[in-house]
Structures are given as C-alpha cells and as structure tokens.
Amino acid sequence: MKLPDALDPAAVQAVAMDLDRTILGPSLEFTDVLVEAVAAVEAAGIVPVIATGRMFRSARRYAQRLRLTSPLICYQGALVADPNSGEWLLHEPLDPADGRELIEAIRPRGFHINVYVDDELYVAELNRYSDEYARHARLEAHAVGDLATWLTVPTTKIVVVGDPEPLDELNLELHERFGSRFFIAKSLPTFLELARAGVSKGSGLHFVCNRLGIDPAAVVGFGDGANDVELLEEAGTAVAVENADPLLLPHADVLVPSVEEDGVARFLQLLVDSRRR
Image (cartoon, rainbow, N blue to C red; front, top):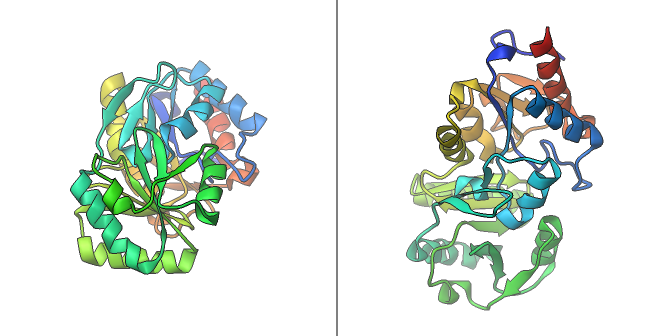
C-alpha cells in the first residue's frame, strides 16, 4: 500500500471515517490495530472524526472507545454532537409532514420502517428486522403502532430495513418519485436511509470543519457505502475500501483493503509514518 501521489502527508489536518464496514467489522468491536492507528493519528496532530449513519446513542460509545473529542457526525449528517458532553451541535430533521409522506409511500410495499425521534428508535411493531437492528445498534426499539399516525414531531431520519434486492428496487422507486426532495441512499445492503434534503455526511463534515477551523481540502475521507459519496466528495482525498458499494468506487482516489484486513488502519499508520520523514 502507498499513499496517493497527490497527497501531501504534512498538509493533512483531519481524517473523517465511516464506521460500519469501513473501520468497524462484523464483530462490532474495533481491532487493537485500528485503535492504535487512530491514537497515532491524533498524536501526530491530525484530528480524527467519525461520520456515520448510526444514531448518536449507538455511535457515541465508539467515539469514546477511540477517545475522540471532535464532534461526532451521526444520522447521515442530520445530527452532529459532542461525544463527551452529549451536546447537540447541529440537528436538521425531517418535517413531520415529510416523514409521514415517506412512510405512506413505503408502507404498501410491506417493508419494516425505523423512525428516530430524540435519539430513540421507534417502529410499528417488534419483529426480526427491529430485533436485528436493535442488536446491531445495541439499543432498544419502541413499538408504537401505525407510524404515520404516531409521527407528529420532526424525525431525525427514517431507515427502511429489508432484503437487499427488494430494497434496491425501492431505492430506485423513491428516487423516481421524490427526486432531490430527500436524501436517499443505502448504507448497508439491508438499510435504506432517508433524510432531509441537503443532509449528508458531506454536509456534516463541512459543519465540523467550519467549527474546528479545518480546510475540507486537507481532510482524508474514508467510506464503503453509497451513503458515503458526499463524504468523499467533501474531503480533499477520498479513500474507499476495496469491497465498497460499486456506486462509491468512482468517487475514490484510492482503494485500501477491507475492514477485515485493517485497510484504513494501515493507511493511517502509513500517513503518520510519512509525516515523520
């Protein structure tokens, strides 16, 4: 592995990393190699940032495991919060009417739907999809019945959960029906993310860079999913893991090995080593 020729290691001010399938593998725990690499990056004067689709409650423990002090980008960029104090620094939710419109558009297809309000997870009923998501996020889901009737307040985002191929079809249908009215992208093969227009990990990174006085062009971004496109576009250097969603690959300047091979950690180690030369 080598750094991109166009990247000046000494000029890098921050690294922005997706969690699942980028730096967090199937065990849902960081490897020691990754933890050590992130610590080395910070010691070298580079700010490590997490940018994830996860809820704040779910992502916070990972930020704290890495001892991060930088703002945590959650919910595809719809929420940015301080991982230590818990303070919400930015929140751009869906309006209730928009949330209900999306739910009613999806419901006839029979997909499971997650709704997020005040950093809590709400579902129509508990089932295998809600159980799997709750296990993945390590939190509890609350069953409230008809979501379209129940939703009367803004929702941070909506996630549709289902099998990969039917979810791909729904993804296309929603793009055709709503166009650019909403952020619509798959994060994992079984998760389709819906958020307010203009919201993305890229917009979240832009907010964090402004807050910390960092030039986005001096950021290296890492991702694996279609929901990481804007993150890689906002960052000056774009890195994808080799098994990334095909939709992300054209946006990457360089590929690194998968999370199972600690690809991002190895890139970070190389970055730190190169700054010392």
